[in-house]
Every structure is written in C-alpha cells, then in structure tokens.
Image (cartoon, rainbow, N blue to C red):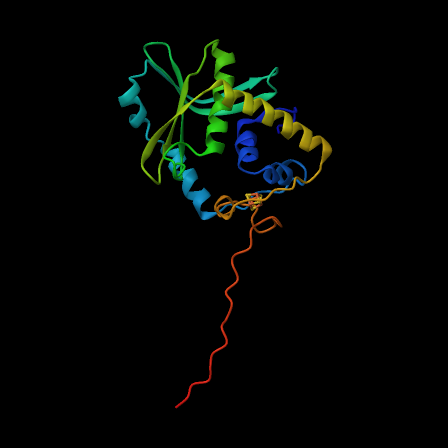
Amino acid sequence: MSEEGYVTAVDVKNHALCPKITYFVHVLHLKERVTEAMEYGREVHEQAPLELITSRLKPVKVLRNLELVDRQLRLKGKVDTLVVTAAGEYVPFEVKWSDPDPSGGAQPHHKAQMAAYAMLVDRAFNTTVKRAIIYYARAGKLVQVPITHQLKKHVKEMVEQIAQLVKSEEEPLVKQSPSKCINCGYQAICQATPQPPRHIKLKQEPRVV
Ligand code: SF4
C-alpha cells in the first residue's frame, strides 16, 4: 500500500500469490530478500522485447512507464507498456522472468496484476481493456490474459482484503504449496514455509563376510 492509502497493482499480485506477503510488507515493514531469479528478472524487464508485441499488434501508439492512480478504486500502479492499436484497443503488456502456469496460461497472481492495470487503464482512458499480454521470458512464450468481469471483481475483493489486513495487523494463516514458496523473498523468515521432506536414514544391516 502506498503512503496515501492506495493499494498498488504489485500489492494485488503479491496478495494473490500469498496473503502473508501483504503482512510482511505492510504490517511488519520487512524488505524482501532479493533472490537471484529476481535480479535476473529485473534485467530482463529492462530489456523488454517490445518488437514481439509491436509486430503482432501493429500499434499506433506505445506508452511506457505509465503511472496511474484511481481514487475511487483505491488503486495505483505503473503500467510498463501500454499498446494502443489502430482499432483503438488498449493492451497492457509486461515481461515476467518466469514460466507460464502449467496449464499454459498466465500464472493466477500475474492475471490479477494485469487486471489491476486494466482497471486503471479503463478509467484513465475511458475505455474497456479486453486483454493484456505477458511475455514469459524463461519459457520464451507470449500469453494472453482475457480481462473478464470475474477477474476485475476478484481484484476489487483483494483491494478490500489488503486494506482490512493492514488495518487489523493480524497475521493471516495460510497453507502454501512448496512451488509458490520456492522463489519467495520472505522464505527465510516465514514460518509457513513448507518444510522439505526429511530423509530418513535407514539403519544399515551389518555385512556378513
Ligand atoms: S514463503 Fe511461502 S508461505 Fe511464506 S510468504 Fe512466501 S509464499 Fe507465503
């Protein structure tokens, strides 16, 4: 959450990944440990392969690093890239250093982040964003995110949950899957981190010679 009480699109993404991250960031004010994957992700982010998207959408306008704030939604965010097509369609685009969901679509927390950007773009440009696009750099895959009414509703609910959590200062109870914790910068301090399976040493039978 920002100092003015706005929930950011990154807060929405983190909360969708794990509500404990909201607690660590906004209640305990802990800084995330930067993992190697994050460092690499940052570099990839800076070299966003824009031609991947421009060759497909043939935009008439490309806006970069667009800071948007909406008082009514209590939401703010920085849209990396916003493509405007000749047909007047607004398409937010972002690069992620990771892989898509095993199903081949965008990861659920990335969908939530893109929907938050879409909602900000809707209101800033008086339009209705129908889709966002993510480039998953590790997999080398472009994935489309349909911006549905359901997804926007989910974002609104999360904005409310984040505000409530920050107000109550209560640590949420979560049961997380190891695959979600593996690249989490709070893993070292998080007691909910799933423990790796213990290797039981089998007692060796004495060898008969
Ligand atoms: S380590 Fe796992 S449970 Fe803990 S905050 Fe990160 S994702 Fe959530």
